[in-house]
Image (cartoon, rainbow, N blue to C red; front, side, top):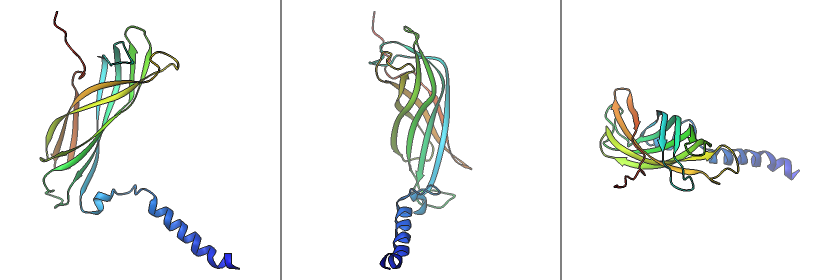
Length: 183
């Protein structure tokens, strides 16, 4: 008898507790406070682009495919037509559409996730360098190197305010680890 009396209230309480801890996918919490939130993407395609990753990869690797830069942008509360100055941008590099070929071994590599950077900017339109790294995994298990290569790259990135909201633009610069030695 005690179970039926408390069963329904306890199950309702359990459902409410679970719902409270689920992530809010429809609207970020910042938007609930009057902030303007945008999720943007930019694709940077490469063909026969050679990188020189540090150890454990000791060979040059030629890349093909597309990098995706994802940006989560939060403008502080303000009027919808004139947001408050400045914003916070979280940038993430996704290299899962990248493939590579080792120029010495002929080994094939598959791109993986890259780094994430959080930055605060003071102007609505801003250009900056996104210094990041991404993982290249050998496609064959037990192939040298034993783990992923962490490849550094620099992207030239612009977040521009337009009439329809912010836009993300990106292009690839040379790898950040290329060192020229004098003869």
